[in-house]
Length: 133
Image (cartoon, rainbow, N blue to C red; front, side, top):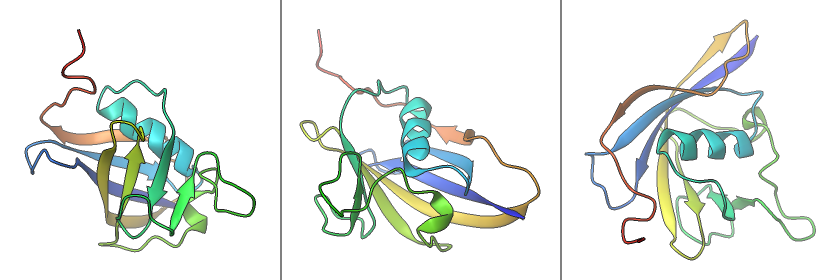
């Protein structure tokens, strides 16, 4: 059996007025999760990022897109990082603009088939570059 994760994602600073709920298989990587989050919020995927497992920006407990020797990589599958229901962690995207997306694990279920990343619920809108002309 495979695991299916249901994750609620909030961009920092938007209160509870903007969020997406994403389903994704444990066979997918953190890279896949990042792409799913960015796509869900209509962001352009063109910057570095990390997943901060203690929900703190520039954390020592993180998985990085371009890790230095021996550091955890975002290529890791979700099933390998030991996620638990109600756990919170963050996607820190674009180290210049410092977008933070808080991710809460809402549910973990067993499924026979791999689940492609998809948005099952959402609310609100944010702009990646609100002051860009």
